[in-house]
Length: 102
Image (cartoon, rainbow, N blue to C red; front, side):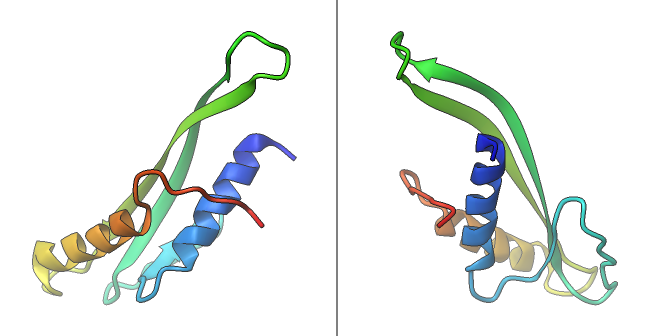
């Protein structure tokens, strides 16, 4: 199994554990947003892998971005509702968080 897939699964599992989250438009899975309901869209962009050190057993550092877009219908709370959802997602992934697929 690839490291990128392990990372994606760990992030998605942690995101899905968040309470009170709108529907999620997962990558490469059909999704029809409702014009009346908020939703979030996620995308994972692996960027690079490199060893941290020079030995053959050096740890591999993987870099990438996990993008979460928050969408709210017009006239349903304005930017403050979307901002509150975005803030809860950000707070759910604090600096230094360690994730595992298991």
